[in-house]
Length: 102
Image 1 (cartoon, rainbow, N blue to C red):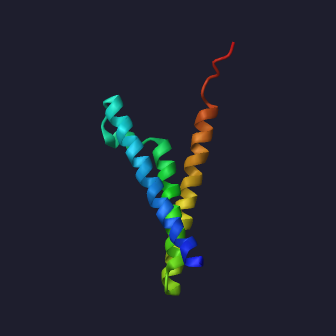
Image 2 (image 1 turned 120 degrees about the vertical axis):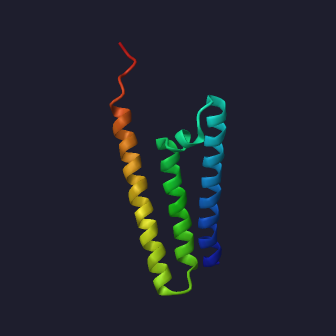
């Protein structure tokens, strides 16, 4: 039962990454922008880091050796740190936006 739980983490992570990439691809087509520029947006990078962290959790949980588990946990922590940094920078930049009120 536990392996099903950990396998679901990496499957959901990859599905989320694919959905985010597909959405950004569609937006690039609609806005007539290069995909490269669209993928550099803070919304995509935040979702990408979260997605890869979910994949890391799944792979850490399904690893067969301790060194492999340690490696995936370290990778997951790196992704979480980057996602947290991206989320904080989005919060700061949204606070800097001028209000539209009088």
